[in-house]
Image (cartoon, rainbow, N blue to C red; front, side, top):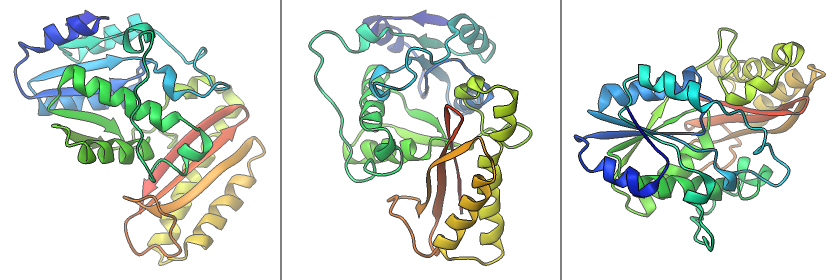
Length: 276
């Protein structure tokens, strides 16, 4: 396994790789959710590249960039076990040198949900992904379903800008009690960790009601809201039932629907989703 921090070195190491090449972009502090992406990439490609980069441009000024968990040595040990070919670990200065001033803006699908709650977040996501795709030139890039809006944005960017790669969605990996795996789960103390299961419980309730024939999106949202409000440590940011492709809110669930939510458990903001 080769490791590099420099863009020019990454391009040089990329050239001799045998096609197809799978890319797994991460912010590090790897867990089983990330490793599921790496394993899928390993199954479907001859060569696998993983990037580790805590991207400052997708964090707001009052968000957790500085305290976001990092353990690069542990990450490298895990990736070596998964037979990763190259790990790209650039610094912020390498990716955003002085005078950097070019951004990828994706319209409409970035205006709601995470885009409304975290201004600039999805612009940062789209920009860093475009840079990684240009540097690494993968055949396929792998993303988890947990960041559902991010997936919609990246797929839209790839289609609109005619980028020459395929975006592969990998199902959300969950803890035994249903909580979606996330690096931010490490912020939770034991009481908060027990409370965090309410996100999955609310999504499961929506799935159950929908399977029983409920199609009124407002009623589904209300039932989810009522359940979460019973948890004293939980504070709802948003609950959405939207068209899975356009992210337009639905009145009735007659097309594939993305049920997504963002909830703060004390000071930790968690997101999750299911598709109906």
